[in-house]
Length: 78
Image (cartoon, rainbow, N blue to C red; front, side, top):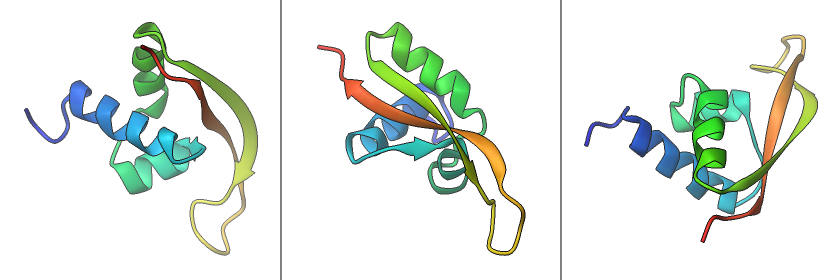
């Protein structure tokens, strides 16, 4: 399996969500997931309950914040 396969991205995202909320910026920067919303959509289709909250977050210190999604795992698929 390649590092950038959808299966690998799903695995990295669900693992991160188990540890707490993940924003789209954090998913892209820390997990190397280019399209976090697509990964969340796949995880939801697999039965995971993931809530989306909107927040503002800077991409780096000193930059103006962007409105970004923050994902929270409420219940993992069985």
